[in-house]
Length: 261
Image (cartoon, rainbow, N blue to C red; front, side):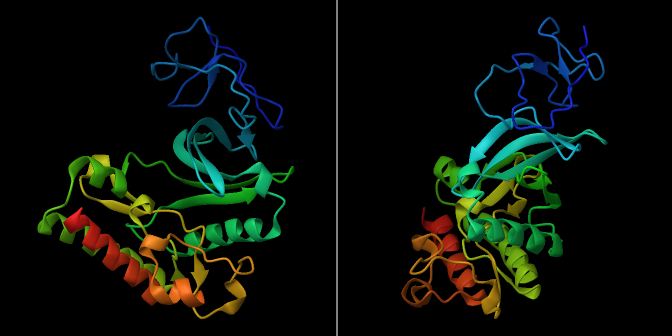
């Protein structure tokens, strides 16, 4: 039995315990086991109080389930309804949505990533703000693990494996820097290894990125040092200086960690 999918346009609209198809994103009666359109096994969802689950953003992107949480936003699995494409949707956290600096940083990440088209950097498909102020960033849905997860599971990399990953990291940074973008939070947790492509990597999370040599792109709080200390150059920690050399310092830390564990 196929129920008519609801177009959820307000934050109060959530799934009510019905089932959804992870392939097409449509909702169905709890009596169904499989999607009648593509035969995918349906997933049951119980209400969890997340108003975004089940919502359709700007009539195009349906939010399916939470994938992870960060300091600035949550990442959800979703589907692009017109073409039934699986996507990842990053949404700024409600409690930060009213902070102008966080909002600027989020939208800057979207604009910077749309400028950088590189195989080793996460693909941004769209971004925007809904009529009720929900900021979202739509990216390709990746399957695999972050580099820190792989390192914890496998232990130190071989020299060859480190070089294979390192070359891709160098290429990603070279492309970002060529576009005048400094990542500022380059670390294993922001590097993704695609499971279906072996050691192919994607650099993620440009939420702290800035335009090199552009003071106007600095969006910080007084006295705040942005980044992860273990991968930050001494100059960045001491003087809050971040430029392409800062990313290269972080790259050296990552390669050392891969070789030594």
